Image (cartoon, rainbow, N blue to C red):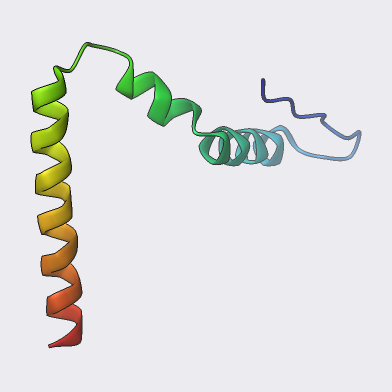
Length: 64
């Protein structure tokens, strides 16, 4: 669970910013999006393959 203790002289905006960063680092939003609906194992495999292809294409474009 992510907790943010707001200091007396700290603005609410800064506290919200710290909260969002902590949530992002903890991976809460990624996990929520991933578990929103069921993805079949074959679909997961297809998505992983597509992601790997995009990654290799990006790396090749960067080196070229």
